[in-house]
Image (cartoon, rainbow, N blue to C red; front, side):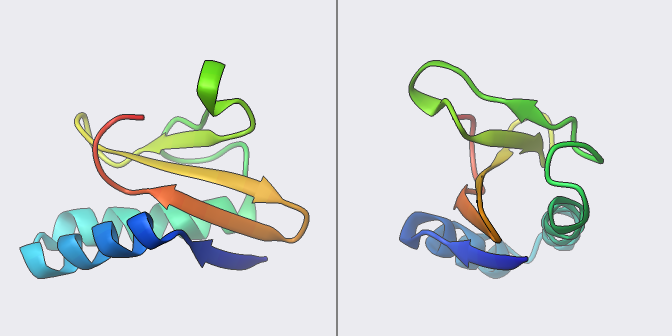
Length: 85
């Protein structure tokens, strides 16, 4: 599957890289690999979102931050890598 990042997600990924927080960077990488393998199950407690976020899924990076994504055909779109939705 192809991975695509929104502009906000790209900016947030760069912020994580600049932060030097290797643990978070590793977790994000693990989550993305898991999403590629099994988009709706796996690590990070995948959760289908509701209300304004119908069609999107989230996985926990840690207690404070979530990775939010959408699966479309053969593409995964990462929309958020910081904070809660």
